[in-house]
Length: 244
View 1 (cartoon, helix red, strand yellow):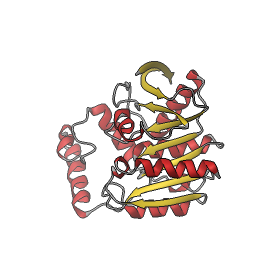
View 2 (cartoon, helix red, strand yellow):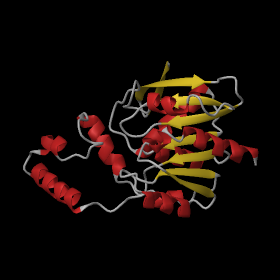
View 3 (cartoon, rainbow, N blue to C red):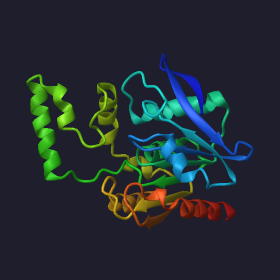
């Protein structure tokens, strides 16, 4: 594990990262989802992608990477761009899971010559259940009477037990609808999705496949973390794609 400091908008961020197969010519950036860190992604992919240098990164506020203020998705993109510039690293493939997939997709919009691998990523809004809508109404009422500090009782599983700083970050990014941006992606994209995913439903993956014209879609057995048992298949598909 290595640590580097990046300056962004007047603040210093300590970013934790690790590189595997550093002698390979092509580099694969692998981004984790909300509530996870680079160790989970290493667990899945460390023994795959033999023809790539793996770059695993803890996003700010997760794992061993610091956070200074509440961030939005574009802030995460810009911090990673600064990191890549500082380390003089060119990325050939952006791979991300869930929230990390959304960040990978936004990066691919700016790095036109890269490829993109998405794993049940966020950014397509699914309709909220009646229960969730009711909790939002109650929480907004509590805020108006000065009881917003009880947000933990109304937060989703991903938002619970967070510091106020990370909870604000979560609120900033959780309800973003990126459909208009996904439709602008023209890089070659491989999309993998858990058929039984409850966090980002399969329908969202199908919508994303429709929006990203130059994409292939692979629904696979499993939930939101389906990739833990399908890592070899994902790696093989990327290998086949590079052979084209």
